[in-house]
Image (cartoon, rainbow, N blue to C red; front, side, top):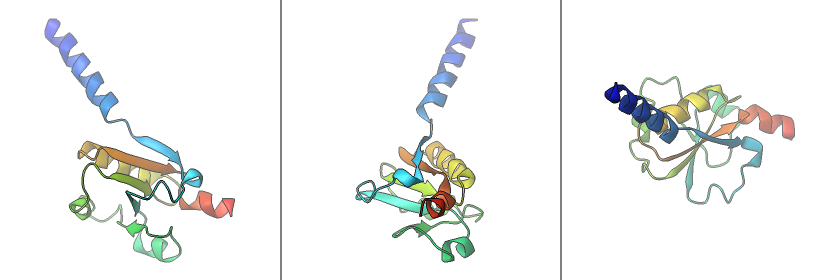
Length: 117
């Protein structure tokens, strides 16, 4: 019984440590990006139709998605966005699980910026 309690505590700790951070994409400023990496996880076609300045396109649907992050330091701040927020949330969770420590999902996606403008 004691071991089950330790197991539950361990699982709760693990889950709380990998919680994904987020902010609205409309709140993103150039200061946020000074020492960070901005990743657009949409398809290359979506990216070509418009994207944020200095965003790197890494297609969420690409089977080599995680391989594209090999050159990104794990303690670097990474901002991820997509069209509306679904893919970026999944990408942020995956990056957190892979050991990236500062991953921020930009909620609302690129579409929220177009509505704002």
